Image (tube, rainbow, N blue to C red; front, side, top):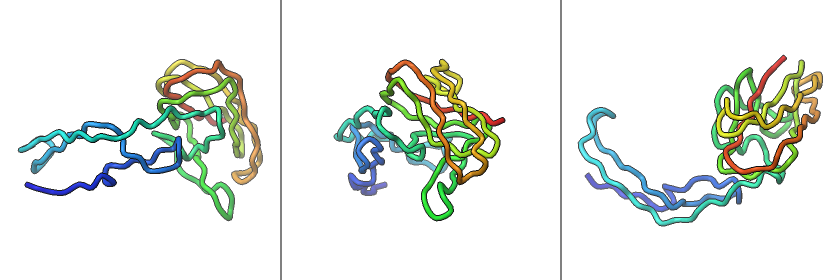
Length: 162
């Protein structure tokens, strides 16, 4: 079997620089009729770049997360924009991040809740809890903030509702 991959086929979106990037990586290419019937395997080594550590001390949109569970995507306003709509226990993560000593988020909530800032996993070490005020509607925005110790690593924002 032969097929062609262009370098751009291996690009990922680099949120740190708002552009496509091809990372230094090894990709396993598997050929078979099913995942338990692999007939051939090859490793494709790609020369590329290293995406820098994400600086969360700068304004970062929640939609620029790296992974998520239990959230949906919502309109930021009736006219434009995207936002993350959290559900109880839902989370978004930012991998390989550097973060400052203050967590601040724009929030909209009918009844209020909280955002837990955790290290390493959704159940990882609790770094801070930001109380989310009841803003009265999904298009009425307020602010939730909390202090934490600056650091580096995978950061998880875990949502809880009232």
